[in-house]
Amino acid sequence: SKTLDTETEAGTLRTQAEGTRHLGEKLQHIHFWKSELQRHIKKLVAETDLLLGQKRRLLNALDATEIPFAIATDNLTCRERRPRDGCVCVPQEVELIRSIQALLKRTLSQAVNQIK
Image (cartoon, rainbow, N blue to C red; front, side):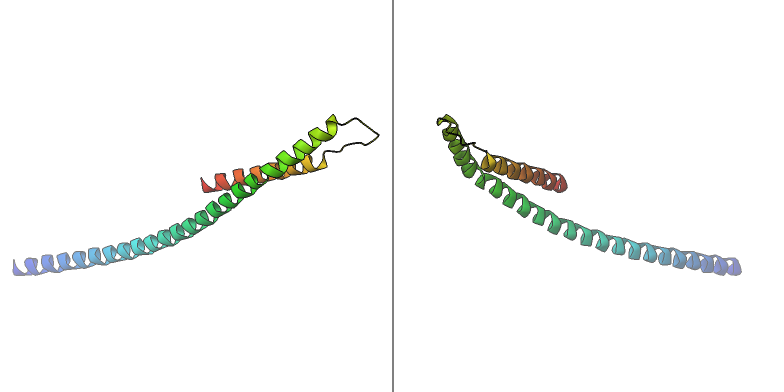
């Protein structure tokens, strides 16, 4: 019975040591993946902050086009009301501002989608 007790104890100790080793390996894997996730989270937060700054700048730029657009539209309206004396009025300024606004809106939409 002492031999059986010794063998059982030795087997139990081996099994326990193997279990402890497996747990240690799993713990190392968990720590590795935790640090990888934390690194990716920091990277995503930094990128999101950059995108939010870009969004803010795009909104400011879009707002800054409103006054020139209103002035150009008003000027075009005034030109159209004048009697035609052979002068062809080309709404280049208005079209340019509209195209810039469209570009800013598309870029803003892309930034918002990336933030999401």
